[in-house]
Length: 176
Image (cartoon, rainbow, N blue to C red):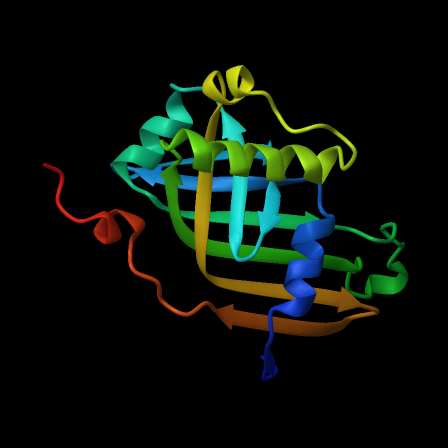
């Protein structure tokens, strides 16, 4: 197998994350994997998405917040590979690894939901408080992401590790 050189950069991967409309959230709980496609917004090292207040996805996140999130796109069409030549298709992909958390604070959820809403509808007004109260949101804080781009059988690999940040819950201090 050929040696792969990896570019330590996040710019190209962020561009792919910002342009894609949906991705696949990978979860695992008690040895049972679960993957679910969803639309999302990428913002400053975080994946944001909205959801209901209950369900399988949230059960998995609460039981094991370590997740991965994948986006992929195919900018060209699949081409014939005559004469036994290897099959090939140009493609881009990014895999994000991180920790998911349900956004409980209403003001923080409002900011996340509006970021999500404006990602898909840039001219939309902010979401009213009753909309925020009736919609849940999840944030994935990315710890590392890897990516790959293939063009005409030439591959480029990226990797970026975000600086470690303390858990938000640890910053709050003890509950009295």
